[in-house]
Length: 424
Image (tube, rainbow, N blue to C red; front, side):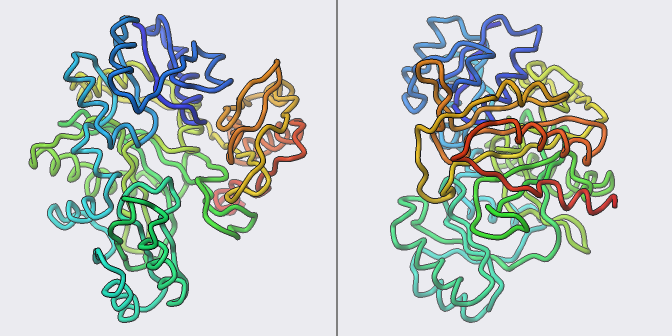
């Protein structure tokens, strides 16, 4: 079948890489894509926010499946519009995508269906929110309610930081996403990500991962979209995985179905795993980035078959299979990230990096000009390695990073430190 993948980041390159390998794939189109996705299929200049244009393209090119990569089109209802046009699409509909589109939506769902999460309160004005922060004290977590490109969450270690975060949300910097704020109690434990697929009735577990949010070694500096990741996450033991499915994922799927807004797509649960087990921090309605870049290289099953089973309601007969290997990715970012960065610098020797055994380089913020690969964003490349152990995967990834010639880029040097600490 012909498949259209929407998006342009590292997650989409990983998805394109996996989809292109499927025997079910005849032609793969990526809109708008990047120089990496162009190696897996055909990039097309299509505005994915223009739903009518996406539908028109899908009809003209006999698209049998649309795969939606980023969250914004999902929250905007692109799956609803494609379904109305008779075009199968992977991802939740608008009502269910509020799991990511609205923090307060998810918190209310947790309340209704007894899903373990942090205590919270929601505010639409700054003064009551500031009073709440002063009453609760720090540490405390302040979140813009809506989509804020991963930048609307502050884990405040002091009351002053919390109050500044509240003022920031209500300053207008996040637009509509900052119309209200959700303030949560701080949870102790270890963070991890857990992924599952749902077809609205059935949920099946995929795999776990851990990412590194802080920009500098030692988890220092500001939060980012993620400076690296690895899968599986050792903290997610088989027992923890069972509890996540029983206490968090399955009640979510059942609850949304009971509400009349069934969830079909990937469920990405951000977890805090403490002494009393897993609690939900937040949901995302799509594959993570950079977590997708370490999940798919480990996936033995056909990704297209799994996506179709989610769309067609056939997950009850699916059991995803995984390679008994570890994947680790190191993000190469432009100097200045997560702040202002300079675009247009030349990146060389990506091919030399991919010559390292087990390594694939996924493009994120790149563009091609006159045969050169240029940096075109903050997070630019994902250097991903697969090996039998976390230590070997990290060694391969950093050997590949060292081969890339990009003086204007940087990376953390300690990706995987927590997992390695568990085995040494």
